[in-house]
Image 1 (cartoon, rainbow, N blue to C red):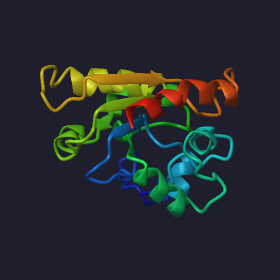
Image 2 (image 1 turned 60 degrees about the vertical axis):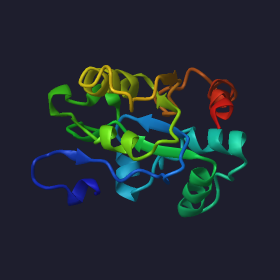
Image 3 (image 1 turned 180 degrees about the vertical axis):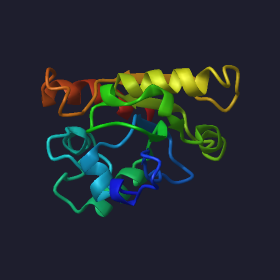
Length: 178
């Protein structure tokens, strides 16, 4: 649901995951940025490195229409979602998220209905911290919780210090889990 379509509670809401039952890894972001929410597309900001990284790793041309990129990524065994279902935030920066407003996605149900998932990769620190605080802390011994959880450098344009080549090098780890 786009910002303008949100109920009058001031919460931003993410959109459904990209996945299929046979997804082997899950990439979790925190909450889509303003441009992604507006366009209803994961990592829609033109300066976000996510799709160029995916192109380098999987050969999925980042210039393809979004729907085709999404289908091809899922066919590779990759699921994509966000830890947060809803939150309040001004702008797009994770640092502007009001922690007390965070509502998480039903990741427990997601993991239980995707038995092939072996690993979770976090697109940045906020996604990882929120997952640990809101999911792992709630179900620390759950047998459905993937034990492989790896934080990757954020592809956000706000994370400009590592260049694209450095981001691609770090994200290469995805390939060893597929």
